[in-house]
Length: 224
Image 1 (spheres, rainbow, N blue to C red):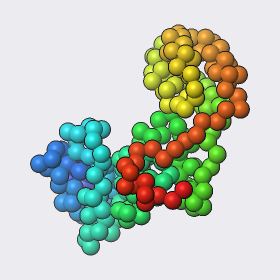
Image 2: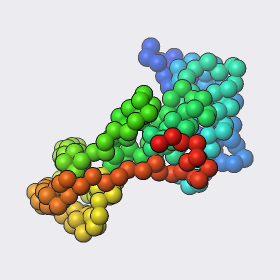
Image 3: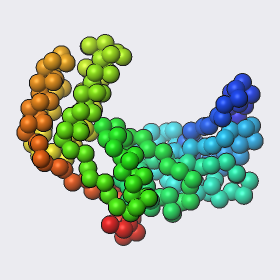
Image 4: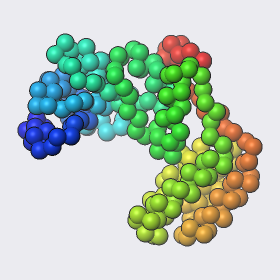
């Protein structure tokens, strides 16, 4: 890792950043040493995902080692945390608790790109933005679908889009019947017809977005 990163740093005048995990498995959580060595070869920032490689996405992300890296007096580059951040409340809680310079959002943004503005607004004001309307959600689905087809072609583009409908339409009652139709359609025109039905059905209905992914103890630390 150090050798390859150093080669990249030396090959460009642009700032090089790294994103990595705590280690390969529970017996190799070597992120503290890794952070120092990567900083020494010239990276400008480090993002740490709070799981090992062998964990994949199972279990809860461990941010305590991320905090140790940030608290290391040898470390002077920005340290960003990643893992399990899926709400504005949790973003603020983890930023304050673990002292990181920033937070990276991953899976929580899939099908819900509005989370970035929601978090930024909550950190700045302590208030929540209104959740996206059905019109905004359908608009995002259409844009995503068309770009997917443009990039991957009509067959693969439509197939890859099917895994995103659940997240885009989460929180709407009885949405399963429409979602089942969306994943069965084979053309953009057929999908557009279902999307029009969804928009007509749910216009005016706004699902409530709650603070997800908290334990009871974490919820007590959050302000609403």
